[in-house]
Length: 175
Image 1 (cartoon, rainbow, N blue to C red):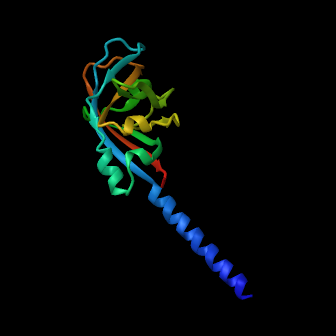
Image 2: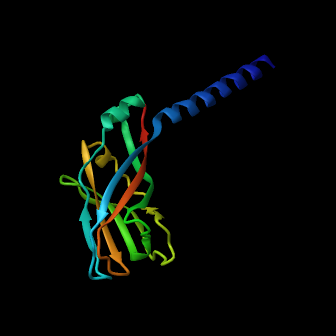
């Protein structure tokens, strides 16, 4: 009976310890950004543009979670939302579809999020679908840029400023 209780206690401690270790090795990093969709007098034609570079601060982020770049095994974009900042009253009905890529001169472009068939009655916020691509090489850099492709469903006469909020899940190894 004592052996059974001891095994049960050791098992419970090991399970709890594994959960705590997993929480230490899996964490999220958020990157907010703001960019503008240029005015588009020709609806229906894909328009590609790039934001400025976003500093990753990955070394600092990794240190906060007691890990290092060399221990990071996977990074996935888990959420990307867009909100219209200006002009006032604008909504996303001007968009037919959008694709978001991470871009770096050394790595090129990798699609990370998209939304097709945006309904005409959409409001001023969009939650994009993720591709599930492992993007650890971008997050380990000092900076990366967002590259955006949009297809408009109607012409726009002025730039539309967007807020982009992205969340990345980092999975590190203890060894």
